[in-house]
Length: 266
Ligand SMILES: [Zn+2]
Figure 1 (cartoon, rainbow, N blue to C red):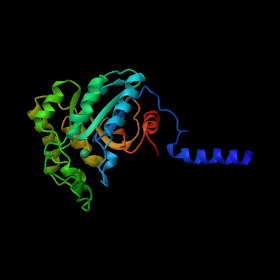
Figure 2 (cartoon, rainbow, N blue to C red):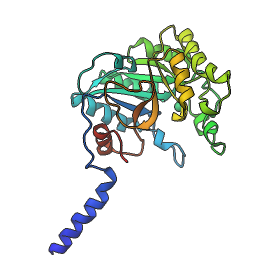
Figure 3 (cartoon, protein in one colour):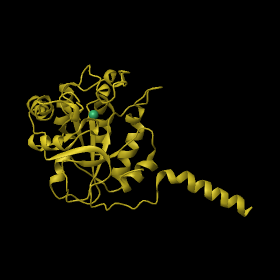
Figure 4 (cartoon, rainbow, N blue to C red):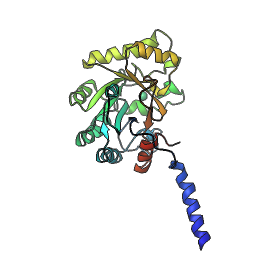
């Protein structure tokens, strides 16, 4: 009897260890930067469903943040003092569902988010720029935001604009002068199209090297985000290499809360 109970406990411990619940909480003085891509239902058999957070799951996450004392901020606000428990939501690439599914939820909970928009985002399969065999066309076929849709989103004050290069380039393997064009030119193109400042940048695929960091600084960005998992402590030692918390479309609220607390899952 007692053995059966102990075995249950052991099984529970082993099962729950995947969530690394013993990790220490990172002080809430340090803002959390969350990384999203799409807010949409999963597609049966699709390769990139991790990047698709179902709308009802997204709403549960934002409701949780709003109801538990979190303050929403844009990336540019990281330059000023912020209250404890600040969260910055970021969305990469410019998928149309950010308008259809994410914006109504953000408005409902008075939340805000930063959009890392690829300038030339139509008919482009950027997954092949990372791995040549990624040629399913899945992300290419995913509807993208039009410039007019982005203008509407920015006018609502819910969204802030961030840069994500001209073509979602794999920067370290991009030769000059194209590399500078992707970073600086991408910023200028957005500033011109949307008539506003573009204070921050996201490295495509999270792939970058020291030269890219230099070019990002030279382009005038105050902050740049990576896909490295974690929470950077304030004051930022490397504001152009900030970590983010990846929000997966395949995880529940428990995992979301854990990542918010510790910055990562593994
Ligand atoms: Zn991207």
